[in-house]
Image (cartoon, rainbow, N blue to C red; front, side, top):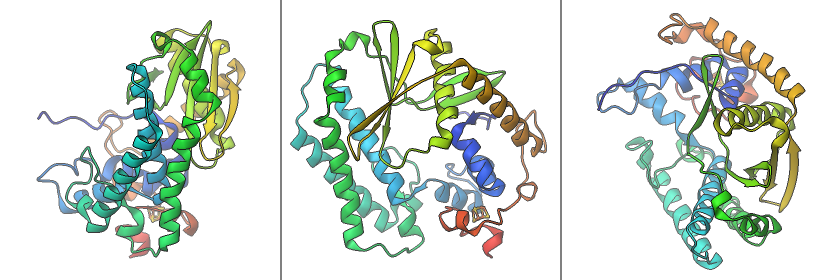
Length: 306
Ligand code: SF4
């Protein structure tokens, strides 16, 4: 396989990590690079394994997204979906993930497709009671059940599948020469509007909303040639079966563009070689906020905790 290059890009989550801790950002986007290779340096490999860990809450979010995607995929291809079969498969998949993580398979195969999750709680021996684990399993089932029985799903089904937009798993657009990654969960065309869907299994972070919606707007404009006023975003909270509608407006998009420009410039300023996107670990400061460290995947290798 040809060696591919670590190219600079931007995303809301990259920006979030950069603002939390520069060193954590370094490990995520530079220190872990190449860790998938068989001949990777030991430390690079370890950083890569740690990067791919998920907390139990992130795992819950990913698996619910996976099964919602699976449900919509069936409907898109004209098949009915049966809730009990879906929940049975979901529970089996979670059980498998959990067991694989407990056995530490992720240290061998940190990012294979299939059920190779590494849970942060297992890697760091964090005590989680059986009741708390059970709650994660139950919550995942409730989320999928809520969507299955929701008015929102009825609305989606009422739109002809020919108007469901193709959603690639990786979506990016160009922002002034920088690729920007977005994650749109689902989209459809309803008369003159594009309706975007965002599945939520945790708390909605209102402070990040403008950035997320503006990126959706910029992506939709480039990809589908739709003006911001014709885009509606539905955030569906699967835990409580609640939909919130948001519109995207030009003024906010302009403000977010300024934020993106500043964020990209700050990230690039720390590079030793901007053209080749090369960074040195010691140029990235560790955070002084221990609260951020508590849930950081890299505590094991971070010099702050030596
Ligand atoms: S442990 Fe703390 S200082 Fe170290 S990378 Fe993580 S967040 Fe940053």
